[in-house]
Length: 259
Ligand code: ADP
Image (cartoon, rainbow, N blue to C red; front, side, top):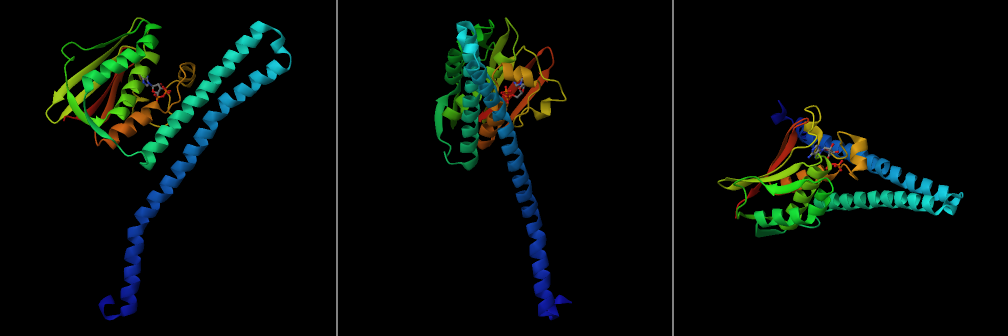
């Protein structure tokens, strides 16, 4: 019996302490593994556009730039790759800010309906290239005051609506829905585009996960957009989910707290 034996009592305390720490150590190990994997992914993702830019420049220096048309073509390609790098760095910065909590959340009271209209306006030009209509679902266009970090919720809407255009079809539609649920409001962004297969659906919020890598690349995707969206909504202690039918379309829905 350890109660009579001070050494045994200490030993048992130590053992108890170690058991309790086991979980923490496991978590730390996982975080560390995850961090390493993430760094590896970032390096890999940045390599491709940098490698491409080097290729274009070297081809030009090797003589291709004597032809003005070829020169323009390769410079355009190099500029696209540079844009990819810039987008990636922007997204990485957003993730880093969210994770370190360096930029703490700034809650404001605002009309989410106004914000959706604002984001629709700013993406109308992009949508017009595919003749995609951005609109509200019937009965869903009304004032709804919420309390949230407006700047970050704008980012959520921009990412979701941009995706609905990128993975939408020509002459398609992106519709916003707003549903009053007592304490919260549910915001849904629905498209009638490609859709996402059930085997991919649970993974689309993971960093760098893409259903179709080449399509994402053509569309200028970083593979980070949805992970940022999820992170922002969870920082609000709200929820986000997705449902989709391949060939029919996709709906992303998230909640916000009503003010
Ligand atoms: P990306 O930068 O590749 O668009 P995201 O994190 O925004 O990265 O999205 C991850 C993947 O989820 C995309 O590559 C795409 O395959 C899929 N996806 C996202 N939104 C949609 C959508 N509205 N319709 C179909 N697929 C989508």
